[in-house]
Amino acid sequence: MCVCQTMEVGKCIKNTVCDRGRGVLLEPFIHQVGGHSSMMRYDDHTVCKPLISREQRFYESLPPEMKEFTPEYKGVVSVCFEGDSDGYINLVAYPFVESEAVDQEEAFEREHPRRKHSRRGLHRTSSTASSSDHKEEWPQLTSENTESVPEMKSPKLELLMQSDVPFQMLDGNSEISSERISYNPWSLRCHKQQLNRMRSESKERKLYKFLLLENVVHHFEIPCVLDLKMGTRQHGDDASEEKAARQMKKCEQSTSATLGVRVCGMQVFHVDTGHYLCLNKYYGRGLSTEGFRQALFQYLHNGVRLRVDLFEPILSKLRRLKCVLESQASYRFYSSSLLIIYDGRDYPTAIVADPLAKEHALKVDVRMIDFAHSTYKGFRDDPTVHDGPDKGYVLGLRSLINILEHIRDESQ
Image (cartoon, rainbow, N blue to C red):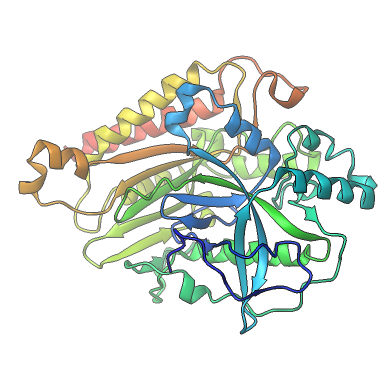
């Protein structure tokens, strides 16, 4: 189903505030391999995710040298539930109206004064948020009408989430599931959880704000994606003691503490079977240092051979990113992830011998994502100011570079 053009879907839920006629039907993003907030496909070149005000401001204030390594920020849309005639839920995006957001945020403040402190900074940007870790900043453009959204059927996920290449899941016991599906199973998990969160809040919240971001895999015919949680620390400066302790424990029990990086998700195309092999964050958390090395090897192996042609393009980008971040004094990217992407197409030697074809065939990308807990000196008047570059993140890049160089040298 293409959503590059706006389309009208069913009839809007009774009394909802988003009855504007035409909108863009959002689809689950089938190549999401990690994270907890659902990524939605807006069009071929754009995805969207629930807005967190801190992350929005961070994208808006990125230094120029970092923009090469982050998705392009494309703005904000309003998203609401709409039901079709069969009772299925759809999420539909409409142009964001700033004045409407301000009015309805003020109404929400009047009805929920206990949350005023946690939302004080949001009025400066008229931004709201959505995350299971940011419940005090849920994306709320409220309506005076508080009638609950009727109980509705689950969305037609199997019809919406389609890929020409099937997926198979490798679970924590290293067993491959027999089921071949047409979407990354993690994307389905995140999408269902997102709909449940939004539906549970629907009595008070009719409109939600989503960030529009570049779809960083749209250049790739068969995107192989590695999602890495970067740094030795995952909790933000504003985290509660309980959450900080929980995040520190995760780091201590994984390669985050020793290497500054752990696997958060992966999909890699195997040419011998014709499907993606997928790993999720639970698999990645249990890896030892050697297990992490094996995971990187697995990510670069297409089931027939190790893609030795990819080492230098990936290493070149990682080294450049390392230099950029070493020059960013006071920046901290807590709980941020790094995506490494390449095309799973395996080009014949004769084609790759051509310089132009080789450059296209070896196209890889490296992007930083997820900035809900990031900070730097002067950002949103954050009280904690850090000195120097983010050593934990840089350690993770250094570990990645060293391990990839080691795998490359062993394969020669």
